[in-house]
Amino acid sequence: MTSNNPVSIYEPSSQLIQLSASLPPRDIPKIIEDIRRVVTHSDVAEDCIYCKPVGKADGIMQFATGGSVRLAEITMQHYGKLWITGKVEETEKQITATVMCFDLQSLNIVFGHCSKSIIGKYGRYNDQVIETTKAAALSIAKRNAILQQTSACVSAIMEDIKKAIINKWGSSMEMAKQKILKDFKDRFKIDSNVIRKITEKESTQEDKLILLIGIRNYLLDNPDAVSMFTKSRYAGPDVEEPPIETTLQQEYNTIKLQLLAKGRNNVLDKIFSTLGIEKSDEELTDEEYKNVINKAKEYINE
Image 1 (cartoon, rainbow, N blue to C red):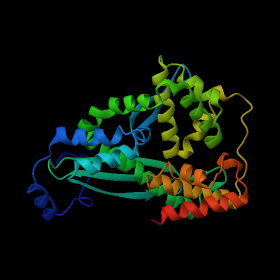
Image 2: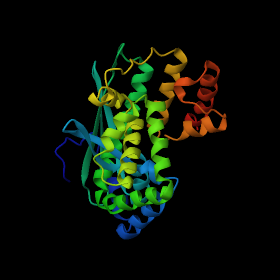
Image 3: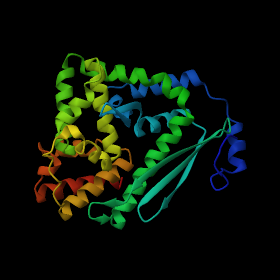
Image 4: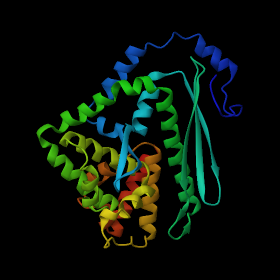
């Protein structure tokens, strides 16, 4: 066992370890091929890329590209023999999720962590939002642990995921970029010029597209990180303060976090399409908010 953390509260039973030991060893090449077949599907690949900010260079945010929550879930399903458990600790200002991923075959242990603030512009979040934030933090900590434990498999398919995204759009790549830039403006209220500035360092159109998709997925997982972009010096001095949310908007945003915690980022897009809504969520009427919320609750309760 390898760990720098106390594991007594996490350890699986000896019976479970013995049961796993009796199963045949993993066929890693087959596992990689099975994962590759799923994640390179045109409807799945875009959800598997994640670009995390890692600091600034010359005033421009820099990003590291890796796997998303969706990729971690798919990898875990095919890798097998992993024991996942975790906990969330709460203080007055933040919550910290810790997830352990125990490989029942090698007995290797890794930990994933995620901390999130529970203090907003108007003070401490209410209990419902705090619980949703805990679920989102656990989801991210779980991703971190799984991808670290299965890094040999994940690293072997990351380039295939990127190729699948590029092949999906082909000659329509510019249209895809414009669609995603519009998404930044409509969904996150981020000036598209800020995002364009960030992607300038990429030398090819393909790399720009991958970065755009990865940043979008990062913000879907971390909605509290939007301020990192609106406060950028590239946003200019005229960035408006967000309006005070109505009760319906608060309920809608809570549901968005709940869907995120379940790894169902695309559900709202499907609901908007089903209801024939062709506007950003910030432009919805009260009646449209109610219809979307009721539909979303059906997915959450599945």
